[in-house]
Image (cartoon, rainbow, N blue to C red; front, side, top):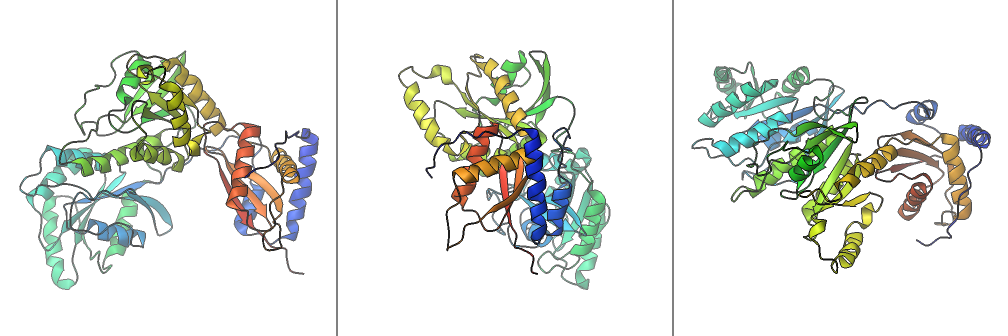
Length: 491
């Protein structure tokens, strides 16, 4: 979309406040909902800090293949999203789902994709099970009541005991009173009361979910962004891209074994590191590598571990390999950071190995690959030698400053007034939507709510976002713009 480039001259604070009062008074003529009023009355001042976002508690559904895990997940979340399939090892891009029961919200993680050798649970399965359990606040262990407990079930029970997480035992496939005795036999597992359930038909799921709520904390132990203390940085990227090498280099010591065997890190490793006199906490996600015959399962748990690291952090450094074209997996990791609402820095590793003649062409390739995240700071480094590693901290600081930025309501509306005057929204169907009022609802990441008389074109929303970034910075942070269309009150 082409438009005249205009340098916005924002009024002084007194003019900002006067404009805000006038626009806010004008909203009284429009039909506003309860959450609109709550937002308008709860607008923060510039000096007020946001509370740290609370992470929803995480419930992992674990068990052998074919016991009904995905069917139970669909029952809990109230819709058919988890793939119900007998074949183990199915990779899903989306592994967690929001759920609600009795007014409480939580996340459900389907641990489909296990590659279990029923003849004997081996080291690979143990590693995968431990990852799923370690990233959860509570676990539902699903057992097929019609089969009873198996050797594999007994092995998983031992893992659950070692993890020390609250466990709710689900005796699935109990379709009627005749199956109650089969369920009762599972007391022998030593995990407490087995809840007889038919995930397929919904029988008994209410009692199971009541027990789940008793087991889950109000706020997740994982993924809490702490308002005080050192800033938290996640190093994320596909396997072998240099995450552990970078952590060792910035730490100045061998904190992480670079040649780690897949799955030996059960949870992201937190490292407190002082850089230029300032403490930082780095959450390293190295420790999982692809294995022959285990690619799908490894990818599944790599995705879980990456998501957990991102949610524990405030800013993520996505490492990309400058010597290779950007892959779909790279794109997915970048999108995970944006979807989680975390600040972002892109780091191209192995840049020192690039031929001088190749670098200009590579720059143009990168511009095309990262066209959707041109707002993210980019640093070219060598994790192995430490070349340009000192550029990482300034990039992190810029991204976090933007992530924390709040624009006063008066200033925001003055900016939008200038923007609309310079470049009005196109007329659609004989009507031109008007922007009535805007406010910044939150920071970390910045989220804006715009009240209008009609829908704004996606292109115009992108225009607003681009001008917001040009005027106020917002380098390195995703920002969201929500539009609320409101009609005039009827006389």
